[in-house]
Image (cartoon, rainbow, N blue to C red; front, top):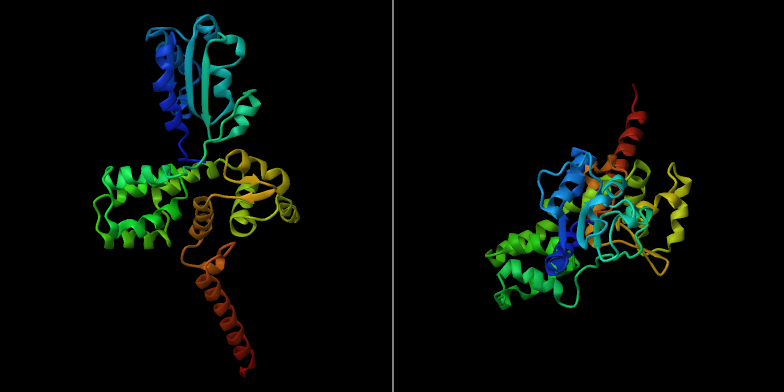
Length: 315
């Protein structure tokens, strides 16, 4: 799930323990770096750990240079399995004293590479969410009593999502109460663009069948037994197999046999469908808002009346 804090947590761990290693490297947004090729990736890794910008990655293997060293490597935002094959191909490439941290939006990459210990970053709770929000909204000052109720609305909206708390806190910083109310009312209709784009990155990586399954679950099946997705198998897509990737990308969670989804992801699913025909709800594949449903039904009824009236008139 985008924006949940994977990179922030990995960076904090790196800064805390990197001094304990002979060499260390934090490869941020490695998916972007990979566009420059495998040799470029290896050159970035080895040059930072060995502190040698002139190292020739085309003739030097990662194993040869690092297997006897105690190193710390963070590979951030892996979006293809080839990246792991290039940088950390086998365990015997590294010393048992070394540590490798990988962040990704897709757990399947870790499974395919044989990673044994996987930690799924959780949303903030127990007051930590408000610490983050207050830091950005009030710069650690105590909020005025006039804002307490409004803060609760932000908390309900963000549901512990760190990026949402940061973005909303920053956008509301030093704003008046009326501006807070206006912003919160707007969020009920239109999602924040920065938050929406961060969440949609995982959705965009789904195939067509999986993209069809996601809004169906967001609209209909949240809180239902996971077995109900078999209903979708009667459609053109294979729901039972297709649900696995959204689960691996933390777009959907299965808890106690039931389907769950973060509120922000539900809103994203609504917005994705809305944007297909923003001005014509009757052409959308799914409807949720009561006003849109009523609008479509009223139009259908009016069209039927018009058709009946037209056919009854003499030509």
